[in-house]
Image 1 (cartoon, rainbow, N blue to C red):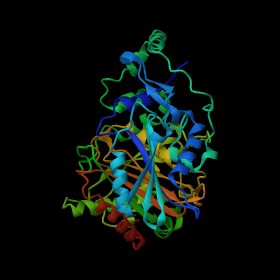
Image 2 (image 1 turned 60 degrees about the vertical axis):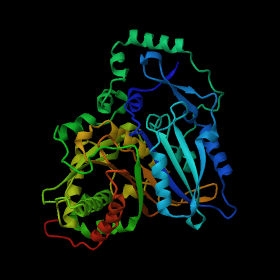
Image 3 (image 1 turned 135 degrees about the vertical axis):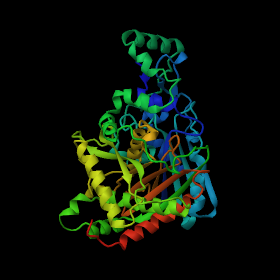
Image 4 (image 1 turned 90 degrees about the vertical axis):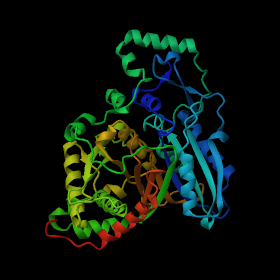
Length: 475
């Protein structure tokens, strides 16, 4: 039996464009041990991790004539050194140098003739540190057959090994692929309609038909309706080049804001995730004002927020554990505390209507392991099946462990997600909490988001504004 891609995975391949690569990445900064940690040692670690997970040694093979979805085949010529690359920043490597490096490599599509992932060992950071930058295609990381490479590196024990220790299996011939495709068409004629993707223009068409997504798309879209997102400078033509900015904040600030602004019976109605969204709202308000754009009391921006939910399976790493919340951020509201409570009310309504238990304030700091990279990818997959007309921006916020992690004695000190851009969406924001910090990764189109660094500064200013905000009678 061939290992065929599901409809959703195949759709990610079909709709990918040179200017819109469909991969998700991560940036991890490490303090090396006293004896050092070099590229050769890193290659050895990565080789050990992927040796137990066959998907990282498989490439995609198209079916002749696209009569069926592509298949995964073992790469008999798998070259670990091709995927694990060595880079260095000009000494001393500043944060801005690392951000520029990430922007450049994330703009490049992955090689379809090889396994769909890359990892970069980046030397030369300030203070003797090094960084690891990973990227993997959304068609590859589904949380079931494969998890994100950063997840494997940091928490290999949490990911069961597969049968990849066996020798590479022979690649099926073109005749075999054609025969299987024709047999599948005879047994299921409707499959031809859903799998031939050469003419696909919007991933939502395939995503809604893909049974394996198991996300609550229908109920969510029914709530939002066909009402399009408001006009926004965030929705612009997306070119091939990128900008990337990292923001490091203190998790205790969000906890203190929640505690101080939501006393009494309303405490449980506001989560740390709500405080984070309120911080982003204030930042977007300031950013629009710096551009000289009109911001009235009725101004809003709609964001799609993938949210992990508890579905009773006990396994958070499935598409079934993600749901989409559409929130209109009140950027026109002048009072920070009111912005927070309006967002909290909207989020509570969305999560309650999903008939599942949303991840609350304590969950942000309580999930074990290092699942954030994989969950960010699942969030990106979920956002990709939604129509771009329904939101101005996608924000993924994934909790991480609150104890320090290490790889072969190297301490992980910072971790930032790198989220892809969608068609017509010039900005994406990913967040990860880890070891008492909240790390923002801002990805923007290089032309339409030339002032991305101003938005990053506005996030810090908005957090400070919430810290000094006073509760209002209306709140």
